[in-house]
Amino acid sequence: MREMQKEVDAYISQFKEGYFSPLSMLARMTEEVGELAREVNHTYGEKPKKRGEADNSIEYELGDILFIVICFANSLGIDLQKAHEMVLEKFNTRDANRWTKRDT
Image 1: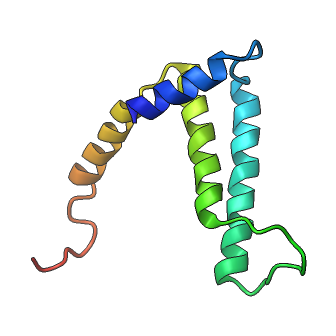
Image 2: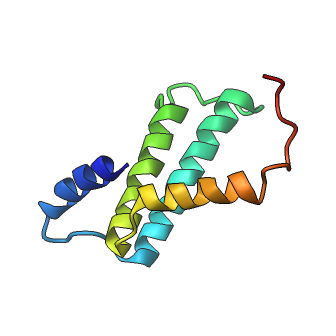
């Protein structure tokens, strides 16, 4: 995750504009999540794509969301590896017995 953050930072750092403000990034993330919802609806829902509509994929939209999440974290100085570890710790403690475990 840290390597991805460095890679995104190297890309963004080549532009004078740099990272967008947190509010702009939140708006951008919301747009990307909407595009993901549209793709999921086309793939698994009852709404087929219009004839001639561009082919996007759930994978592509998730990639867009990952990119903006990394930009958001970088702009705020958040280490996503550490954030990920904190979330997993939370799930492994608070939610340890919340779900039915598979037999191993």
